[in-house]
Length: 164
Image (cartoon, rainbow, N blue to C red; front, side):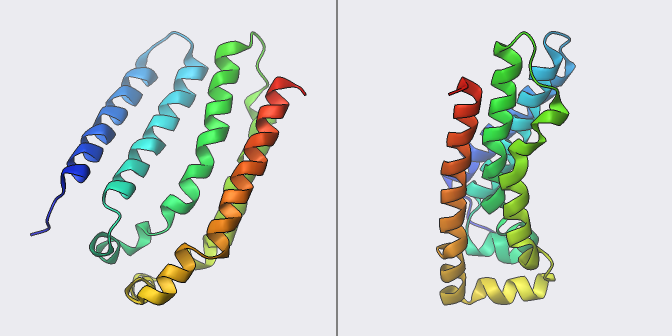
């Protein structure tokens, strides 16, 4: 039996609440585009909370295909928050298809991590059990690139929104 921590229980409860709120947002008839975007954001955040709450070696050895998903999932927050704010604050928000450029960091990060995702479960387990290599991957150039990409792109989004 796995040892469940209080943090895991709290994050799981918060995830369930996020999913329930997403369901309610999708059912409402008021401000549908903004509510749909917020519901998608809450589903992603709920999934991310589960990954963070169960972020330990045993979990990822049991479910190796979920490892490193949290590396790229955070790159979806800013574009979705931007779109949500845009739909709430502007009378004529950009068409959704014009806003696909906001998801460029997500696409870049997905391409960077794609070779890892293409591995089968046993290869991922082998990488995860090698603590030295896993630590280098976790805190290596990809982590630094992700941080830099977030900062640059989020600054650009903010400047675009405020029309500097």
